[in-house]
Length: 115
Image (cartoon, rainbow, N blue to C red; front, side, top):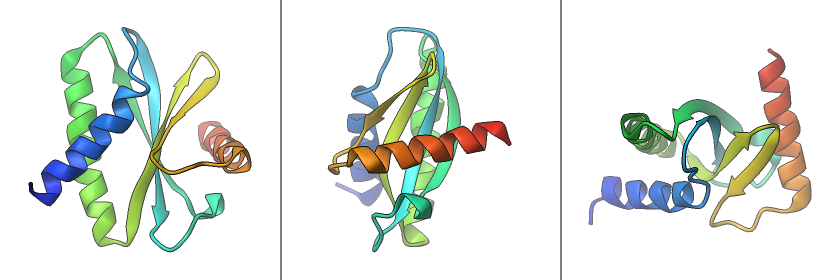
């Protein structure tokens, strides 16, 4: 299996944990340097996804696969994705994310939204 296919599978596994029946939501992709677990080092990419539209879902998966492969070249790895729906946040990650890590990420997301 190619690197691209493995990366896509990983992203689909994370996505399946937060998948919604319908509606438009924002998903935040969390990238960290491979040698860091510090939330302040996180690079966050926000993407709007319409779960009612399969084309929107496919575009999200395609874009995230491409961005993740590009990020890996820069020494970053996708540690998780965060779904924002009606003011609450749902994390999906294969890593064990502490509550303090999640709280720091939410604060970072909130500051991004204010900009």
